[in-house]
Length: 283
Image (cartoon, one colour):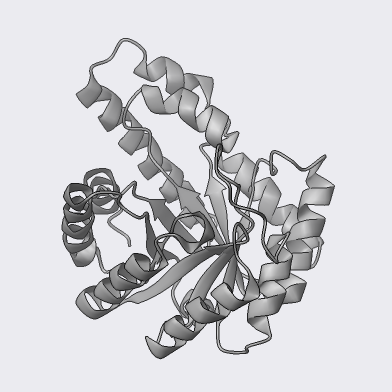
């Protein structure tokens, strides 16, 4: 089933994101996490992969495992970095043969020190347009409630998002955020621009203090001062509990305000996500 159909019938949807493990030990952690989250009855999951499709075959293995074991839809991330049309066609053909009909099209960034090139696709909209022409995939794209770091302003950011939708995107998953007001303003701007596809909220709880600065740098995310202050001087266990409770309140407010879905960035761990979902009794 396409994710767009899921989003039109389940409100809110629940989904998870996983990333490619680099070692066999971490791979076991991923499989344990997938198995542990199976009981949460998610609607779909996504799996990222290395730049230029460096883990494409393994990612396809994990996607098939999720689909066969957990019985919910799966989606592969595809980025512009390092891709030529031949490589992309090969991956898309494998997805078709495996019965995978959902992809998340992203621009991606060239890793520092890498010799990868941009490839045949410069922008995510180019990728969306190319994949959409096959007519066999439901395509998702990324949205940025606090504006993409490279965008000059919110208006331009929404303009580019609208272009991705016009090229064939059927739904949007946002970057993680910690202040729901950013999401609501983003959604309102999108609606005013004529974007009518579902917008799924990206959720990641802070479970240790070191994540705070990392999220600020990596995701340009604003973290409320009251949340930071509530964690200062606390034990690791208390910080995790505070972060999880904050995420629960965030999710409750989003559901109350008719969010299309909650997409949990799991970091390949199940504990925090399970605790959040266990507390969201209405889901």
